[in-house]
Image (tube, rainbow, N blue to C red):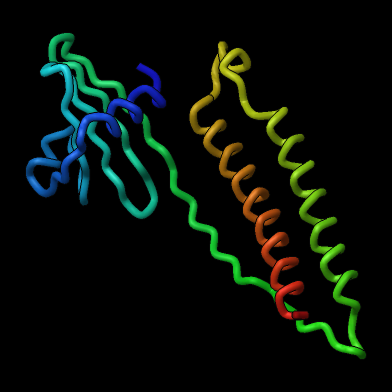
Length: 161
């Protein structure tokens, strides 16, 4: 089962909250989790913490567990919203500069996606999963910056009304 299939099965089968000992029984997960049971022989368990989401697919008939761990990155950025005035930069210039930065960052994201680690490059060693996770984290940071500049442009436009 692939991760997207596990998530689809999870959402389609009425997940319920599990905590404490019941959650810990699922591969030692901690905190608060959810379980969706289906096919009488399968379940998908999701554990959510501040820094990670663990997804597990349990097949009781085959006695197998597939597990995915997703890193959660929290990036907080505040909107920069100068108030255009007669003695300062023109509103149009501020908006254009923000949008130019956003455009370049989105181009950078496209370039970064071309050099994401691929399993074929790890056949003789290396830690593909860790390297892929780090590369995806970097892409997410740049995407967040692009969105921040877009929000800044909107804030300038709204401040000028």
